[in-house]
Picture 1 (cartoon, helix red, strand yellow):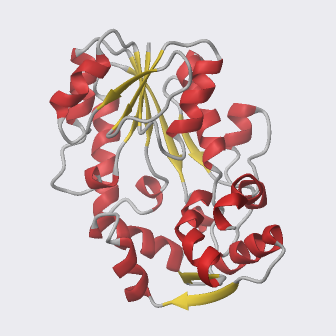
Picture 2 (cartoon, helix red, strand yellow):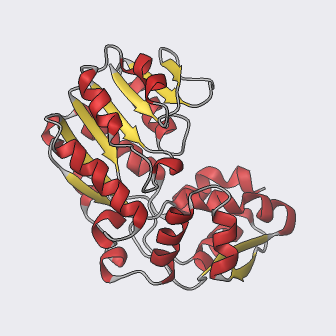
Picture 3 (cartoon, helix red, strand yellow):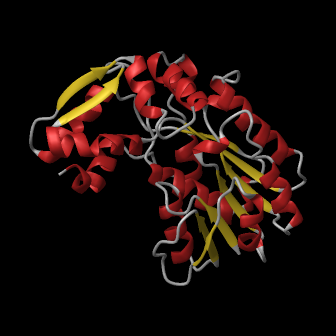
Length: 279
């Protein structure tokens, strides 16, 4: 049995689908019940409430651990999930961490994630750590403004990073969950090229066949919007990266191709698959 946390999100949903199609027994965990692929068991749980996760781990041998935003704060205790998993009989954990653990180790949210990585390494379990950079799917935050105003609003319009398609993260995660050759691996996951927010808006406009204006936000404006959805520590750490990425954050990692045998998808591929939400 494989347990997938965050199973309704941009990574968890395609991962759950891929594992089900591979014939695996899957328990999908999310805060709210939603439709699942045939044969997938769903358990409603909040990772911040450890007792709610216990039923999902019954009979599980493998866990995909994706932490919600509220668990990226210094006062949270997400490492406790590792202990619960081990006590429940889990033997392998694939952790979705963050590139910033290596590139910005002193950021508050990165310190918290490093603690989870360390707890996993010290747990005695088999483990693999995935460290993605920025997600292509963050562009979904622009969907309403594109639909209603033909506008994308974002900070640092001409500063880019190699954003990764969540579908690539899901495929790498599936490989690591199913193949013990990846045990002990730490994989940095990026897209195939650096792309700026302004260029992302242009890609959306091209796919729509209609103009999309770009409006550049100040850092404070962007932070005000972000903190409606994520803790202030995570917002600050993210803004630090996208305002002035360092050389390690601009590097195109070979790890997606190393695991999957093919190059990561371009942002344009993500737009093509998701263009309906922008219409």
